[in-house]
Every structure is written in C-alpha cells, then in structure tokens.
Amino acid sequence: MLLTDYLVFRPVFNLFNHYDKVGESILGSTLNHKITIHHTDVDQNGFFFVQTRSHIISKQRGIIEGQIFDEKHRCILTYRQENFVQ
Image 1: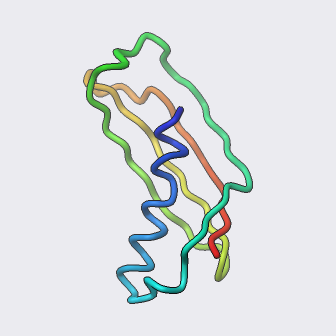
Image 2 (image 1 turned 180 degrees about the vertical axis):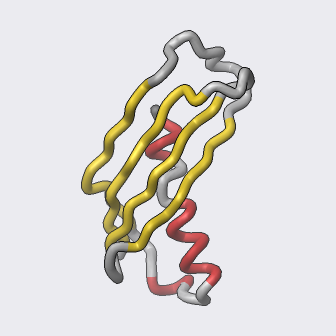
C-alpha cells in the first residue's frame, strides 16, 4: 500500500516537467485515496510493476489511477487517488 501513496505524485510532476512548468509546483497533498486489494499472498521482497494514469481535473487537482502487479503477473491491488498540487 505504501507504493500507492509514495509514487502517486510522480506522474503529476512528470507532466509539469513535460510542459516546462517545473517551478510552478512544489507541494502536494492527498484528498481521497481508495485501495482495493485483490491478492494477499504476495512476496514482499519481490519485484513489482506499478502502472499509473494521471487525469487532470483542474489547474491544481488531479486523479491518479493505477494497478500494482507482482512477479507472477497478477494484479495484486488497484488504487485511485485524488490529489491537490500547489
């Protein structure tokens, strides 16, 4: 579950970098965060694939959706997080 919160702002900051808006965003905060766990028998020391999609709602709010897969190619959890970037 830590990966869903730790990596959540990376896509937002990548978009700021892509559009040369790097200095415009320095702070971020989670507004809503939903996690659905699909499998619990996961090797915690294994490798994970994190897939994220970032949707911009307004100038300072966004929604990030994603899935995390384990080494067996199983979707172990899905998440959706609304965030605020300032």
